Image 1: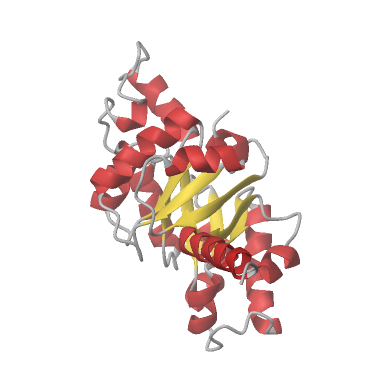
Image 2: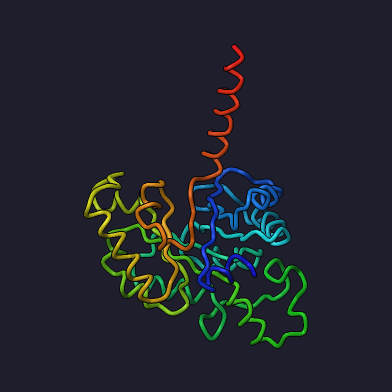
Length: 255
């Protein structure tokens, strides 16, 4: 099963964020390291769709889940990312039920949404519908697609019950940086009010059978241990920095 199918089947998947690395071979490195998925950041990173498409092809061939965060809620981002072969899209700053509904409309095919059909490309591994009838193909694609709503505003927490009730959403993912800023307590991850807000999101996800996720420090990962099914920690920049620091440390021991 793909990482998406495993998550929808109730399993836990583990991965990290990429904001710098643009080489398709990173999928093979992730596979060798035992990761289930990579999420590429098009909001704060500079990835083009051409680069994303190349990485998606390598990721799918390697059996590593390929997701991305688009810059904003727009058809030109969501549909192109999915058509390029990305298996999950995360939209930042989803704060209302209406935004969640629009996200699903653009990310999923009928009858769940209204995504436009272009069957031959990265989304089908360049093999087209392979004899499937149109509806069967769309159903299969919906089953292999994640719609990840990033919850990172106080407004989103206020509206979380309505957001979580939207059919077709798959994951509620906390963005702690922006959420803490929106709540007027930048970086105060141990503030009880902040933790209560995340707990409210977690409970809404569980109530509506959505996966819950946090991309943040281990203190938050540990706080919701056993309840986070899409586990995402660190990013490629930090991994490289820590690796380079270790090289310097080992070499300095020779001085």
